Image (cartoon, rainbow, N blue to C red; front, top):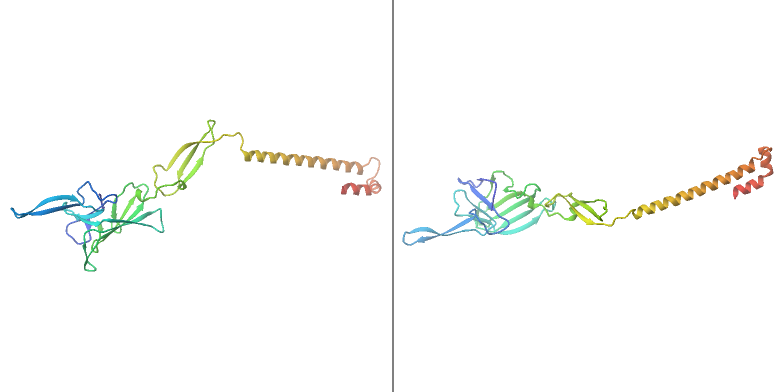
Length: 263
């Protein structure tokens, strides 16, 4: 059983009331939630202890001075997800137990205990405590509100909660895969690595395709440059004839020049 982190009660009792929580089992191996059965001895006319056993409950309370009598405040477990923050924890409701006096309604009422389980990756098991007051629990109306910061309120990590980095494939045909946790979830290690097989190739297919396209482009560019240079050289030879003026040559060969330029 986990003792709630409090020693004072707002129920105006002179003696402190202790609270215990165990969400895993009804069975307890200590004296935190005990019940004692007494019977009247007909000879001595006194009540004697016949049996002492632990209560089959997940939550109980008892007087601080009395280890023999405890009272169940939660026997049925119910999980409620937090709608606005699914990774931040969950709400647990415990109902059932001894019928206690509801001071507001003036009736005997079945107790209930609500525990806000808060995800805290580095808290470990943690310890339950009052939700609104660091030192007291209000039990006047048979409802007990607690909070519990613990690692076990966090969801388990899945592969989607990690960033994955692959190393290059080595000569042995293997590579290292590194997983790093990037979300708030529970796992044994925030970062871990593993080896996996891979196929090593000298050059990847995308790189080969890029090189081939680049070579084709260079060849086309060279052919275009050579053609352009040779064409201009022929035009220059026809326009600039030794011993003739530029205008005269142009008049004589105008039609042929136009045909050459169009072609």
